[in-house]
Image (tube, rainbow over all chains, first blue to last red; front, side, top):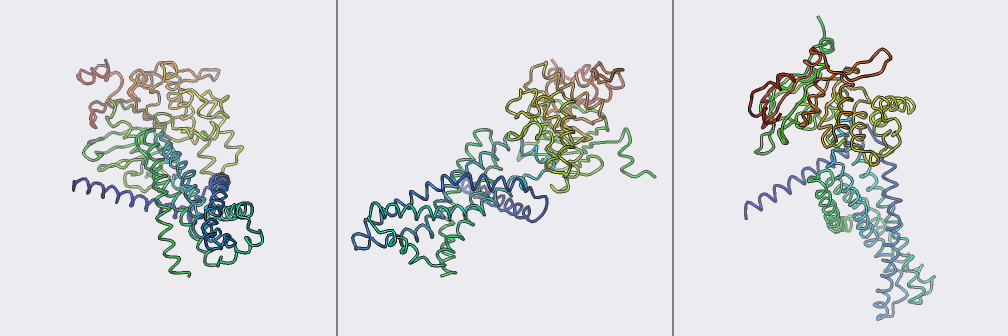
Length: 257
Length: 276
């Protein structure tokens, strides 16, 4: 039993060490040549534009469901007109960043792990190295930059669409006047809330992509291994998103409020 | 006095040297005290059963794996202690053909073959395209230039992999089971490419295989240009055949080293069993 725990701890420590090495190499790849510009543009497009539909739908329905649920509760206190406040703060501070990140984990994290994993098991990564290309610079750096910078953009889109979804429910189901809804949306939204909602996605986007790249590049065991890597990337990424959200929230509450 | 570069550029200079190389993965010893020298322009054919460490030798030469002990020289540079960044300059003169081709799925044949020029140099696109067409013409796949790897047959994929490796004119080509899984006729076309590159382009080759038919074919044939400029693959002269040397690996050791004729005549029971 003790031996099994020791083995598990060693394996976990090795994974963390390799992850930190990968992240270090990726950051070095950002500031030193060669930089593969067209790959960076390609990844911004794939991660940003490619994820827009899923983010729009998630944001819209989350905002709508939030308004619908909270409307009923607020009714008990005769506070139905302030439903906009609840929707906007929830979306901007918490639900926008976290749900967008979770959607990206499912869509992008799994895709990256599967793509890099397939490249590993078919020797394409070794072929890249043999041809004089550093796989970290060519494959990880563009994805990491896209994750860091597109997650906040998608989160902003999700926030707006969520608030819009809330308005649809508030206006047509809860019968709250539009002017009342939109004024309450901005009533309690402070600069610190917006800052919090914008800082989180940078961290979450970075985590999703780097975890997926790490898992993908360490794939072994043929096609079965690729399947395993995909699952690990999604599960690991999702847990990391939720955990990082908690810790980042604690830090931000401590520092900016 | 001649400089190291001048000495290494002369015929008979060593291109690859393994000096008491050892590699183990945990408890399993893959290569044990392996030593050999490959002369520029010559061919080394590494035979052995699956898991005997054949592919590992190639990966150590390219720097994809690092040996635990011993010294590895490639073109006069010691590669066993180099960093990934330092290895890039050594890899400039090395081309490797992987077992299944390892073509990039998302790129066309043109982009695969010209990969190194497109990604790692500032060469104008027109010039890269000319080189890609030239190389594809050499291996007879010009009409497939805009196809994706998934649209090619197994033999065509291996030949495109050879084209990709030779596109930037490396001095040393490493073939890792280049004909495994191919039918005999297709395998012969791949063998012919290996022979042509060696004899017409002066490429130093290491061929890893467990396909005896292909190994002997490569060792005992040579490519010549006839009066009209056409290339023919014909039986090798004795001098040419001597330039192809066999190494037989068994459990990480070299259990035989010599030419095709010596291998055929060997009375070693393991070799006899392997050749039968």
